[in-house]
Image 1 (cartoon, rainbow over the protein chains, first blue to last red):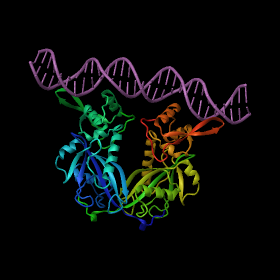
Image 2 (cartoon, rainbow over the protein chains, first blue to last red):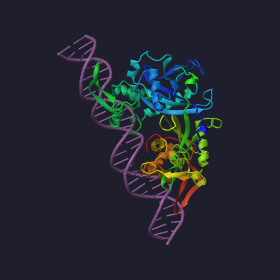
Image 3 (cartoon, rainbow over the protein chains, first blue to last red):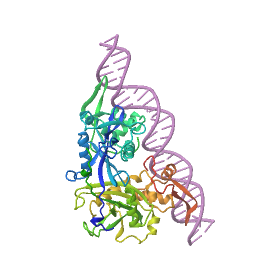
Image 4 (cartoon, rainbow over the protein chains, first blue to last red):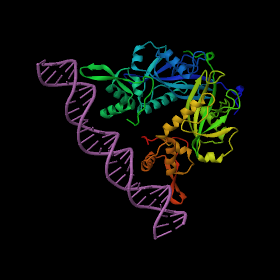
Length: 231
Length: 231
DNA sequence: CTAACTTAGTTGGATATTTACACTAAGCCT
DNA sequence: AGGCTTAGTGTAAATATCCAACTAAGTTAG
C-alpha cells in the first residue's frame, strides 16, 4: 500500500490505565466517575488524551496521566493492549491504549485521600469489580486481571505491590492472595532464592512479638523478573 | 481530567504487521520496500491506515492489510504492542498498532510469487533480519521475535507455521528451530499428548522409505493453546 | 528468670515428575 | 533376508514437589 497522507485516518486516541494496589480487602483497582458524556456518571478506568506537546511517547503519556490521578511518579508500568473499534465510543471510531500500573503500598499510604476528584479504590472480588463500566472498560479490566494473574505464576510482579521493604512471609502472602491458593513455604523460599530478584536489606529486620524477619527489596524496582518454572 | 472533545489529539495511526512463515532457511518475516517518503526505498513491516468505513475494529484492519499483502484470510493473528511517539515518524506524533501473524506453510505455498508488489520473505538470522528498517520497525520486529520465542516454550504456536497436516517429528523440528536447541523426543511427545491441542488425522500417514508416521492437525487452527510447564 | 507463645527459617523423607538414553516397530531398498 | 532410516515406547537415575516436623529468636506473662 502506498501511503499518501490524505489516506490517513486519525482516530480519537486515549491512554487508559488499570491501576492496581493492595488494600486490606485484597487487590484493588482505581476507578473514576465520568463527569461528561458519553457514559456520564459511570465508573471508568482513569485515562486521558495524549498531549502532543508534553508527551514524548505513549509511556510518557501514561506516566503523566498516572501522576495526575495519583501523584505517583515511579510505579511499575506495562502496556497491556490496545482496543479500537467503530462502536466502543458512541461518537465514532476510537482507540484506547491501555496500561497496567502497580502501586507500592508506600505510594498508596503517602497519597491517602490526596487523590484527584472522583477517584476511588475498588476491591476486586471473585468476579472482578461489581460495577458496570463505561466504554469497553469492563473487558479491558478483565484482560488486565488475566494478565496479572498469569504473571504472578512466574514473575516478581507481586513484589511491586508491597512497600519497598518487605519480608518473605509478606511476599508469599501477596502471591497467595493473587493466586487464590496457599503455597508451600520452603518451596517458595527456594524459588525466590533461585530467581534472584530480591536482595536482603542489610541490618533491617521486621520486629514484632516473635522472631525478627529479614527484610528484602526488589533488585530493580521498575521492571519484572521472571523465573523458570511455575510456583 | 474532564474530557472535552477539543482536548482530543488525533494522532496518525497505522496498523503494522510482523508476518512470519517458515522457509527452508528457518523463520522468515515478510518485508516491503517503501515507495514513498519518509524512508522511501527502505524495508519496512507491511502496514496500512485504518479504513474508517471498512474496518469494524483494529483486528479487522489487521486482517484486511494481511489479505491485501498476502491473500491469506485465516492466519493466526495476535496483537503485539502499540508504539507511539513524537519522533518515530519525522512528520510528527504517530502511533502504530502492531500485530503478529503466522502463516501456515500451505498458505505460503499457494501464494508463491503471487504477493503484492515489493514484498519479500527475509530469513531471520541469529541477530534478526540483517537490514535496517524504516521508522522503529527494527525494534518492533525484535519485540515480535521475543514474543514468539517466549511463546514457543509453552504454547502451540509453532503448529501454526506448519501445513494443516503434519507429523510429530515435523512439529518437534519446528519447536527446535524456533528455540534453537534440541528437545527430547519422548518428553516432547508426552507434552503434546497432555497439552491436548492436537488430533490425529485418521488414516493419514506420512509415507517415505521408512516407518510411516501418524499425521496430526491443530484442534483449533485459529487460536493458541497453552501448556502448564516449559518444554 | 523462666516458660509459654508466635512467627522465621530449615530440614528430611515419601512421592511424583523430568530427563537422558536405549530399545523396539515398521516401512523401503538392495 | 538383511540393512537402513525414521516412528514411537520404556526405563532407570536425577530432580522437584509436597507435607510436615523441627529448630531459632524474639516478646510477653507469671
